[in-house]
Amino acid sequence: MPNASAANRRQLIPFAAVSASYFAHIGFFNPYLPLWLKELGFGLVAISILTSVQAATRLFAPYGWGWLSDHTGERVKLLRYGASMALVCACLLFMELGPLGLGLVLLVMFTHTSSMMPMSEAAMAHLVSQGGAFDAKRYGRVRLFGSIGFLVTVFMAGAWFEHFGMKHFPGWTVLSLAAVTLSVWLLPDLKEAIPLHQEKVAIWPVLTQAPVKWFFITAFFHVLSHIGIYVFFSLYLDSLGYSKVWIGMLWAVSVIVEIAWFFSQSKWMPRLPLTAWLVVCSGAMALRMALTAQWADVLWVLLIAQALHALTFAANHTVCIALLSHHFPGRLRGRGQALYTVIAYGFPGVLGGLAGGLLSDQFGLQSVYWLSLIAALVATAAAYRVWRLQHPTESGQQAH
Image (cartoon, rainbow, N blue to C red):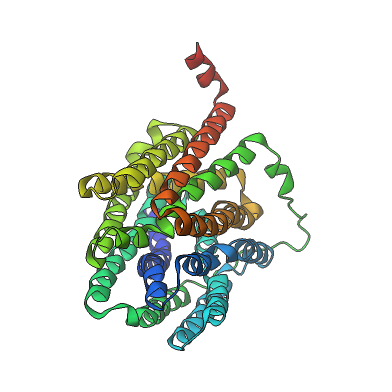
């Protein structure tokens, strides 16, 4: 058994490299894309539309890739293709492109990157399970490498762009995606066996279950409440007079607490049912958005708000992946992961990005965070419903 466990850990190393390189790319790209677009001369509405392209691809790309990977078993080959195509698209960012041309390049690039983590996590699902059960400790150890990658680039890019300006943004994109491409080509070329005569596994019966429906509702609103961070946070801080170094520092705070959570989550997760953690995470998100909306100009308050990222993202993400593994096992795995990306990141990203752009253009960037607070409160209510459905006895006893 020890030898088998060591071999299992060695198999996880390439997936850790993929996580590290992918989130290193995200670590500079997502925080600084709006500032690059601002330097190119785009207004708030145009910036919100272009940054929402990433979310728009999550409406169709992850499920398409997930369906293809479930039916072919070729998750690794598809990852290699996607990373290589994204790298080619990144090279086009050096060209002088108008809004339509830039939007098209981003569309194709994001189509090939938006499903990379769902496919990677589906490919390694059996490696982060113990006796068929999700292993939070093993998953956390892999995922924290992604957080470290994000932390390194958000620090480095903030300092770089502060000193040299945003003109090197395309170069950072190419280099980071080159690292992603190299890491996926180093993955073992594994193919899942697809029996020729195995019956098709339908996903609809799972989706009609009440706990699953409410899970996707809370996931939708929870991520919708994050759009103020994902799309507008850097612009918001910039408007309040924070330097690019401090913008990077504030992003980094959230990643540091994220790393701490992923490293130690095996100690905390067993203390509550997974569905109870959903309630805690969404409640923490409501507090985070209230602090960010009202006191973002007070540094120590904003630091506390960013520290809540340990719950609002890291804990929530682990819980969601664990619940997906439970509800969508076996040949439903890829489609379950992809559907989560579509519902929890695709639709909220598009709606939040566009609505936030229009809202901020009319009422200022602060208004986005009040809207995010409302979304977080709805997510909390839906999460409570999931918990009651999964633990009716406990909730009934507490009611008395």
